[in-house]
Length: 488
Image 1 (cartoon, rainbow, N blue to C red):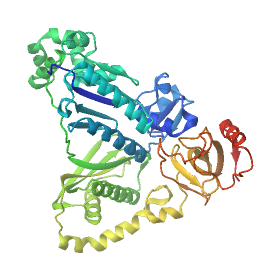
Image 2: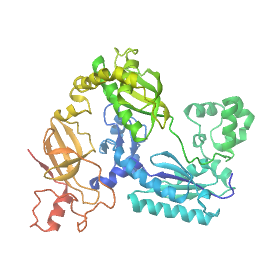
Image 3: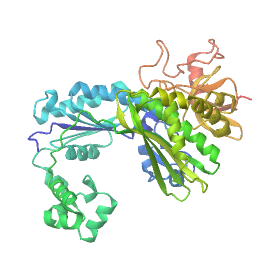
Image 4: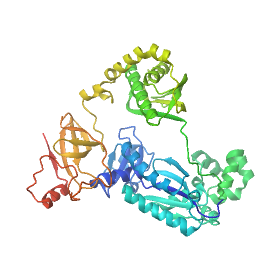
């Protein structure tokens, strides 16, 4: 344990939902839920306004809709979230060379390694400045915990939510932890908590009082001894700067079970291509290809094949994934498919003979994928000729009205609200799903993207039809009303 609270834990507040509220003025102050929007979807993040109704992360979206039917339910926009995350991580690296990212919105920082004095006042000042810098750079808020150990710093940041800072002074750990539930401690999930409950152990104080021997008897040597140390506030885990990925994978859950073998194969090909894109974006290669199949009855199986050497060749990885799929019975229906690559390396070991032998088949499979996927498939150049799937929350651009986002779609129509992060709540218009003037867009910056001289009440990308004669105030009042209009 450190004698000063020099370990910082940052956790962005309701990250995905807050980013969506920052990007969409009409949703600010309103309940927002981000996650899978289909009948099998799961909540990724809920805004604090939605949490009042009981909506939580990892909850089925269907249950969330029952609890909070008036919330905005949006599909994730990971391109935007990664952009914001990169800006936040840059600020953390300015504080110390030892930054341990846990996810896009969460990280530990060793302030001592960054030369911050081991004094409470100094680390508190650093934490407060970090919160201000994050707000300035991203427009979002984050909560900061400071303590002498990673476990305690994370507990402190949770206590600081939302948009706060909590410092746990060394020597006060046991007093603070004592009344907390055992689920507060790292590694205590539902099963462990139930085992402890049956033994009459409910709080951290009761865990410490039980003693190491009793915990070892209940949970085993490694888990019991570790849990006892944490109940006493002891955690000597260091902040690790590099958390090297062991694998890269992608997976999709389908709204309706896939029973057609050709469609399943096409989806595996599409996932393999997405996996290769991530692999190359990370500058990595891999030698083991893995597929994951979850059946209609929730039974899940994986199959893997190890190649002769690491590769990032899409043809090789597609071929291996399809070969693995051939050994799996999917006739009962598939609800989830995944493709991954492990055994990562930062070089490729090309096998030219294998590539030449499979090149023709890989090309045939690639050509067959869009045809087999049908209108519901995504990706591939042929998809441009099919109706697009307009998921709620996604960015769009209209040739006449400018930038906006999808509010919803159905029965051949798509409803779009035209607004930007620096505008007032915008107008709503409805189009045919195949309107040639409407196309997918890219996320706009949450801060710093407003054109010079533009008023905050006006959209940043002005529609071509906007006449310059009417005064800005009149146009602003119309935008603010959010009046629904239709373009037929």
